[in-house]
Amino acid sequence: QVNDSLYRVTIKPERDAINNSPWYAFQIWSTQPDTIKLQLDYEHGQHRYIPKLSEDSRHWQRIDSTNYSADTTQGTATLTLNIERKPLWVSAQELLTQKNYTSWTDSLTKKPFVSR
Image 1 (tube, helix red, strand yellow):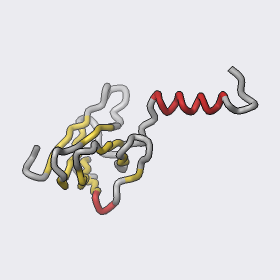
Image 2 (tube, one colour; image 1 turned 90 degrees about the vertical axis):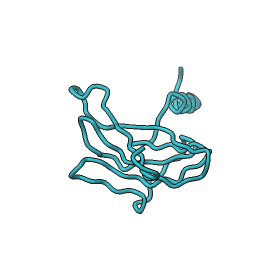
Image 3 (tube, one colour; image 1 turned 180 degrees about the horizontal axis):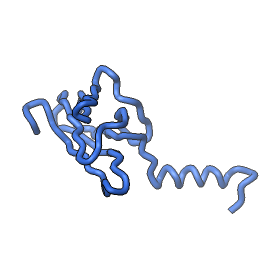
């Protein structure tokens, strides 16, 4: 926490020598409704993706442009987030989890032209 309303998250690549792409996904919430600024700071990389938000990890939308700014000189981004008890997902890209893939492959097996 930088101050009363600004928080900083440092995003590090798993192996920067192989791929320093700053991909991230996390949940954020508060015991009391609040509006905060969250700065994304990168180690061995810089900000690349417009953040996506979701309340359920299935339905995603880009953060509103009025709640997002990127500093290309510093390689950071600052988000303004309205947080509450219900966790909010923040991600570089929409999450595709094992559950998503299982659902997709199950739906394919119902097609008349697909066999197991």
